[in-house]
Length: 125
Image 1 (cartoon, rainbow, N blue to C red):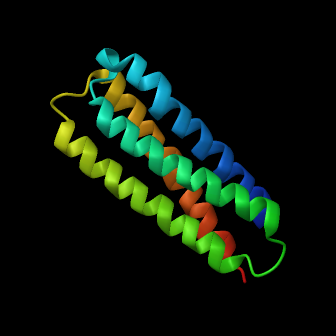
Image 2 (image 1 turned 30 degrees about the vertical axis):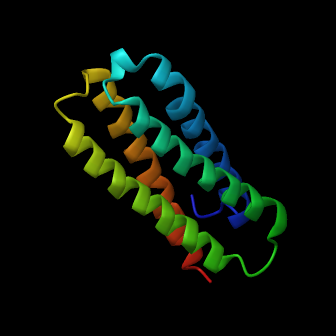
């Protein structure tokens, strides 16, 4: 797993953030009744994911050197996003459906795995 280059990791992060932004911003609000989270919260989370997409895409396109601090920054951002999502899950647990709970728990697991990879790769330098 550590053989992934930092540039590739920025691309993976960008793709994941874009998928999250699409799902949270368009798909889940359309099917909100099946997930239970209020639309404004979904749109807030989608906005954050879209900012992370832009940042990671910029890093993927522009960075060839001095990438460590940029990779650590997105890792900290992703970790903060996970913490925010945990608070959202706790606060809206009673409103979330099984599908909503499943989606957000799985999303957090995926992001946590990515954060671990980002910290591991950035610590090699």
